[in-house]
Length: 83
Image (cartoon, rainbow, N blue to C red):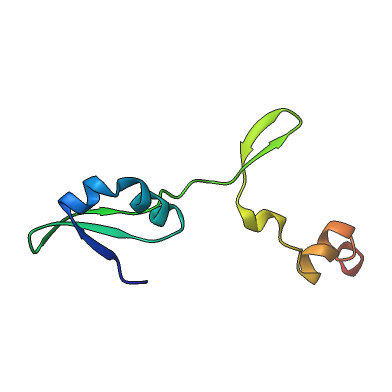
């Protein structure tokens, strides 16, 4: 994991918008009071949302990855011929 960007409370108050932009890009920001870290800003992980026929569902990105040869053969019924 990349090192977090450490800022003092006053800097965080003054530059909150730019710090949030940094977090949205995947960074981390630690807010410190004096030399003591007191809070961490990190991105929120949200599931991928897709709309299918007007129905809103959550599906992981890997759902759309290509099938392996074995998975593809199973869907095409090729494995049933070996039984």
